[in-house]
Image 1 (tube, rainbow, N blue to C red):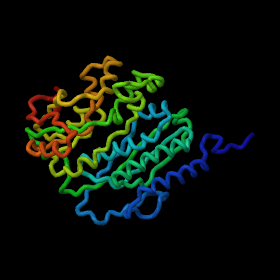
Image 2 (cartoon, rainbow, N blue to C red):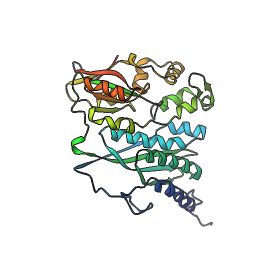
Image 3 (spheres, helix red, strand yellow):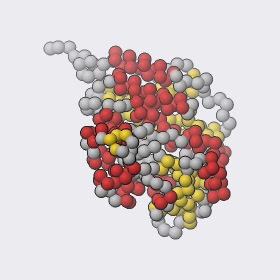
Image 4 (cartoon, rainbow, N blue to C red):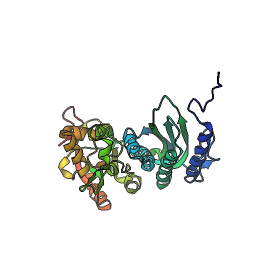
Length: 334
């Protein structure tokens, strides 16, 4: 009887070691003076000295089935940017500065070039916001992941001074809701998209998009950290418009007694969403329930301060207001 080996079972330990060496180079490019030691420890070490009354903010998330679009087009560099930017935006809704990030990449068969592209994208996005890619896990698990399938999950930790935490409790009736444009679908709604189109459709050029459908669908999730950070003192609440769109995400930051009215006529919906709507004959309510419809982040501000915000961010638009709650709905889409 032949002796069995781990490699024969589908796990190549030597290949994993080579991949981790490449990952280490990208990770170290994001290191700063707060990192203690080197990449590759069992746990990442980070020095927290210098913060006054700090509150740590943590979050984990995934890219979802956008990965299937990346696989269909064999393009994986932007997926790494997606997961970092999504996680940064989520903790930033509390006012938190991103400190360090970790990833999990699970594959049925280790593909070194693919891992390199993913991690390079993560390192780029981390460096852009001063966040350290401090560690992670690359797992080769045949039988759990089939064929070319893989999964990508991110874990982030940030910090905010306790007195500066944004939790929505300052939101009042009369406040303005300011929307910032998304770069596309971001990382939500792709299961529905994949029901509408085949892999061949992704290579179709759309004049209204100025590129192929696949290129538009893989546009990285936009990060709002740099554009909003200078305005945090004027912000009463921040809502990252991800899965569940406006109703779910604005609703989660509202204090008791108020609701949000969103005026969908206040911005122009990008062509990509119109293409999806027509292709699937999706009704309006479902579109606004699933997709961000061109708005990726909402800021809630005192109406007097809203003009200053718009002056600083010309791309921003007032898309609604906070009103007293009179019914069961916390978010009303008009």
